[in-house]
Each structure stands twice: as C-alpha cells, then as structure tokens.
Image (cartoon, rainbow, N blue to C red):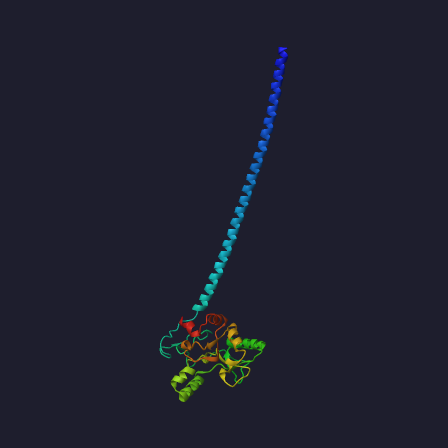
Length: 287
C-alpha cells in the first residue's frame, strides 16, 4: 500500500513537472517570437531610417547642386553685365565741351564714343561703307554691319505697318564743316553748338549714325516724334543694335539738343544694356 502511494506521488510529481516544463517551453517559445518580432521591427525601422537618411542626403546633394548652378548662373550673368559695362573706354567729360578733347583710336569698333569730348581724325573715312537700300531721298551710306542691322529693322517696321527710311547717314569731315559753319554764320556759335557738332566731332563721320524718316514724311525731321509707330521703334530698336542717341532727358549728358530722328548703331549687347539701364552712350563712357 505504501509502495503504491509512493509510486502515485512520484508519478504525480513527474506529471506536474512535465506540465510545468511544457508551459515553460511554450512561454519561452512565445517570448522568443516576441523578441524576434521586436528585433525584426527594429531592423526594419533602422532600414527605413537609413533609407530616409540616404534620401535626405541625396536631396541635400541635389539642392546643393541646384544652388551651385543658380550661383553659377547669377555669377555668369553678373560677369556678362560687367563685361558689357566695362568694355567702354573711359572718357573725361567733366570740363567744357571741346576742351581737353581726345582722339578716337579704336576706329574699327562699333561702340566708339564720338561727342564734344572725343573726336575723329579729319581724314577718317570708314573703309566698309555701303549704301543703305531703303535710304529715302538720299543715297545714305553706313558701315556694313550698321547697314545690315538697319535693313533688318526696316523689314521689322514693314511688318508693323510703317515705312522706315534713312535720310542721312555718313557725312565726311568737310561736309560737317559746311553744316556747322553755316549754322554759326546764321545763328551764332552758341546756337550752332547746341544743334550741330563741330567738324571731327560728328557721329555721322563714323558711318554708324543715321537720321530717319517714317512713312515718307519729309515735312520735318522731328516729324517722327508724332508718328503713331514711333513708340514701337523706341521700344524695339535696341533689338537691332540701335539707340536713340540724343534723348529728350539727356541733353545735360550729350550736350546736344534732343533729336528724335538720330539713331546710332552700337551692337545689340550694348544697345540692350543702355536701353535697360536708361543710359546714354556718354554716360556709359563716363561711368
């Protein structure tokens, strides 16, 4: 009997231990699974974090690259502007007109300054003069690049519905001398100096200047001012390399009375720069 009880107790203990071991095994199995899930989650989070960090680094690289490109563009634009702005040769225009004058040396350049402080040699005649095809009542001549640009502007004017003519362009030293001294004889030196330039100081001798008429109106040179298409010309002439040489509000700079009809070819880059900054050629060289 005692043996039976002992055996039963032993069997019960073994059975209970077996249950506990099973429960323990199940517990640890579940714990292991939970730990694995947590580890997997942490691993995934680290992976996502790494991916996010990499993306941010890439975005920063792209942003930096874009910033560098923009800075490069701005720098190039500034350098381009600086190149145009500083290409002019400084001319001292602080004294009275026709005093302490200089003689133009870079005669082949299209952006030369000719005014009451900067003159041309008396024997200078451009070597590349050509007749402007649409030269109205005169056989106006201009330097080849200026003539070509003017004819392009004439074609554009035609598209806008008006006629653009060159009534006067190149004038020799002797021709200008006759004009000026006729003015002096008729009106006096002070008046002549306001409305004409002395021989050797006229832009017309460069072959880069042109007096215009619009719609064949020969009543008066200033008639262009009242033509309905004149505002278009003022707004777009720089696109063809021309500027209004003697604007209404620049007489204190040009030392010449306003001339609505007098255009000057300086090339598209400089013409655009002067137009956008509201500068006369005299101001450009005096900067």
